[in-house]
Image (cartoon, rainbow, N blue to C red; front, side):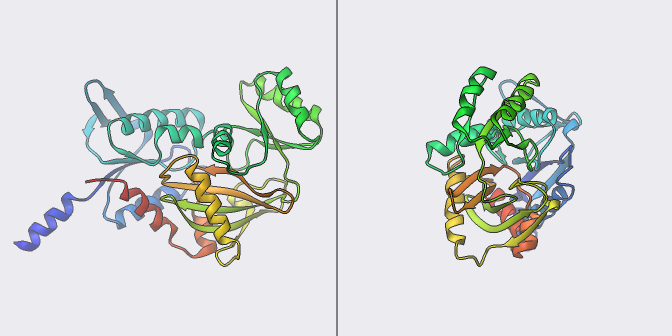
Length: 314
């Protein structure tokens, strides 16, 4: 009898997580299953759902449906980058879930900052986080003026790019103007950035989980100038025994704090330049975790699951 009561109480306290399978698993083919398995091992009741099956109504209260059936849950989670339309759909759901008082991976305002490099750099500047100087403009004439403040060789970035996509090295200002003009014609926003030329093809990646740095590794990309890119193109080496580990950890935690005071997870890319010093490139909202696990042998998925479930109050 006592065992039955304890078992019943234990089951009642299981957090219910609605997990949306990434509709575009290009870079994260296995992450959904790995995260779901980890949450389940940590006593969460996880319901898998596809984006196209989710709907909700908003009136005096929020009601969420899966295949037109009303559902109840404590937290909503989806992981990985998506195409623009799917990501916009995800933002709508995330906003509604958060507004209803439930837990999400990131707060809606945090999602917007993490998805936009320009907004990240604005926050970094506000909180004195070092990063390579950027220039932003909203017309060709204005950009021609801004680019004069940069060397002939500069970086051009799409503000919504990820995994190195949308990052270009230009070798003259005219080339930068041409690239900006093409982006403007496609109604896309690009920014210019100082090229840190003594760190080509490599960066330091710190995983920050639950607001605390958990691992650090160096990613090297031998094929091009980019310091970030697709994980399959990189060699990854643990820096957990590096003398500079604590320095990397401290900067990464501060970079995440500049975006959110309790970031569930963030992959902070750092350049360690002799010329410019430590420079933060960006904070990734859904960092690839498995490469860092392979390099460091740390149970990072377990840490991630703990950090997410810790936010749920039952």
